[in-house]
Image (cartoon, rainbow, N blue to C red; front, side, top):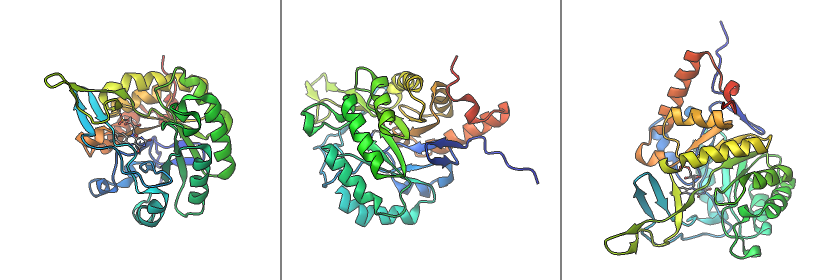
Length: 304
Ligand SMILES: Cc1cc2nc3c(=O)[nH]c(=O)nc-3n(C[C@H](O)[C@H](O)[C@H](O)COP(=O)(O)O)c2cc1C
């Protein structure tokens, strides 16, 4: 019997992926697995947790724009202990694919404490470090905007784990290449990008902000060109693999990100309008690569 070639297999640092698709943190609930097989995904990225529970921001906190989504969820979560006691056992029992746990801290020490506690738990294949939150040690500036802090944070986290260490980059920086190189030098094994852009919507009729938080996070279709450009720029700057995201709805969108330099891609906002988006992307890619006789690995970063 001939060996079945998996044209879509990929690698993120220490993780071998059966599919180059993941789900973007905060956008996907496991209830979607009632609708399609998990094997469509190479990894599951959980919603960002913080040390203590967070109630999130007051409503309204979602608004659909002409081309994308605004959100100000505000990292609502049950906190580290809640995650370990309730969410993690559930994820462990449901998931057949690698689990990447996203977390965020208010200081370098807090990030390290969270990782140390998670390291004691079974069933976690890697971490996604969300550095987009404001840094209390450096008032007002997000962790992810300062290369020195990103280096220091990644270095300390890398000392604490042998698992896949993904650092998630923010697009809201002057030079993403600098931040990417800092995370790589610190010991990140993969970079994921992009988190949400800054966005805002105002009701012209009343003059009111459509989101209670006013300036919030912008994701979905409208951010794809920005995400592609930042993926390309980051791919030029580092050697470690990229898990890219930002506005991916179709398999053609995903392909564009592979050409730009992504080893895998995440789907986020698209799932809100089409819970089957990941299946369609997977099937489209499979058909494309088989028809062209190509493999995913052969096209990563080959944009001309
Ligand atoms: C409602 C919502 C909640 C999100 N929550 C998180 C989160 O908890 N942690 C995180 O790192 N990113 C979060 N994100 C950002 C996504 O993971 C992703 O980086 C971004 O939406 C871009 O991808 P997309 O355009 O495919 O959605 C959230 C996005 C949305 C729309």
